[in-house]
Amino acid sequence: MGIWVGIFCVLVEFLLLFIVYFIARAHNPEAFLTGPDKLATLAGTVITLFLLTSGYCMVKAVNAIRCDEHKASLRWILGAILLGFGYPIVKYFEIRWNIANGIDGQAGIFYTVYYYLTLNHLVHVSWGLLGLIWIAVRTGLGGYSSQNHSGLEAAALYWHTTDIIWLAIFPFFYILR
Image 1: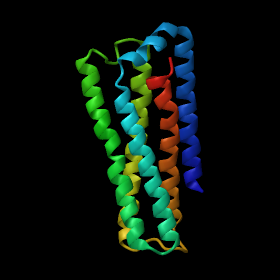
Image 2 (image 1 turned 90 degrees about the vertical axis):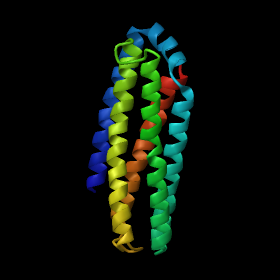
Image 3 (image 1 turned 90 degrees about the horizontal axis):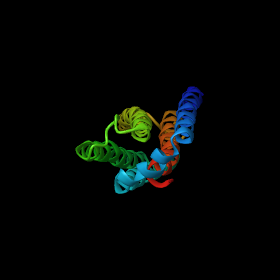
Image 4 (image 1 turned 45 degrees about the horizontal axis):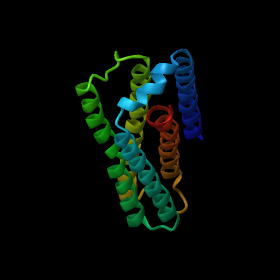
């Protein structure tokens, strides 16, 4: 039950951040019209693919544990973790590329909002990765079964929440004009 409170809090937090996005966009339409042109859409697309594929791995992990397939569940969780780490790696190189091209938090309101939202999301993904590492350890030690896997499901729910949030962030900054 606690995970639902956490997810609700995360969703409210990002709802408020999205309100900031829309207010900034309403007051600076030109910045939000031209801002995405300078971002690396490929980086955002790759991040999207990493997160969605990682989320798929978590679906498979939960399904495997429901069938008491502990080793398969652990492999799927490890796959989710490896794919999940693709996000911070790509984001690191994207930020380096942005800064090298003069796109930092002081480059205008669009980029300030972009950095605030995407780096805040990165923090939540990092927490999710720590949670996935924890459930991988627990799964490896036999901590879950078809009868008791609520911790694994809770981690998967949080992980899917970060996916859903990214699916809003991605078009806001990389696609919409």
